[in-house]
Length: 211
Image (tube, rainbow, N blue to C red):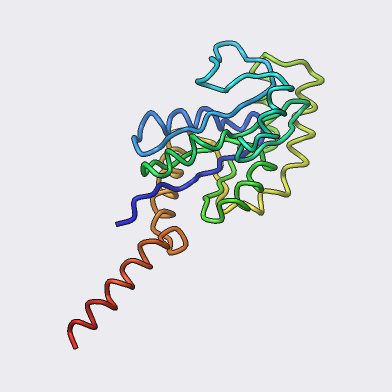
C-alpha cells in the first residue's frame, strides 16, 4: 500500500504562533518531520543554526537559488527565506508528513510544484490579538512591528488560497485540529494516485484469471 507522506504547508501572519504549533505537533506525533528553512535574517535569542533555520548570507542564498537547490523561496521584510529541496523529498519517500513553515509567496510556489500538498493558514482570532502578540515578544522595534502588521494586511487576501484556516486561540486544540486534518488529507484520492493505479491493475489481472 502507498505510504508516501504528504507535504504540509503552514503559513500565517508573523506573530500568529506558527512556530509554537509546529513544535508541539512534532513533540506529540512521530509521523511528522520539519523541513528546516534557509534564511538570511539574523538568529533570534535561543535559535540554533541547522535546527531552527540554516542561517546564511545573501550571497550564499542567491548561489543556492541559481543551483536549483531550493523548493521555494521568498523575500520577507528585507530577508530571504527558502526550503532546501533534497531533505523534503527524502522524508516524503520515507512516509513522513513534511511540514513547511513558510510565507504565502512560498506556499503558492509549493502548490505549483506539488499539487497534492496540503495548505494550512494559521491566524489569531483577531487583528488586535495579532498586534498584542507581536508587542509581547519584546524583541522588535516599533517600526518593525508596524511593518509586520502592514505585511499581514497584504497577506490576508491570500487566506482564500489555502485549504484550511486554523484559528490559533488554544494551543492543544489547534495541534489536534491540524493532526486530524492531515490524517484525513492523506486518504484523499488525489494523494493516493499510486494506490489507485495499483489496485486497478491488480483487479484487471484477477478478473482476467477468473474468466
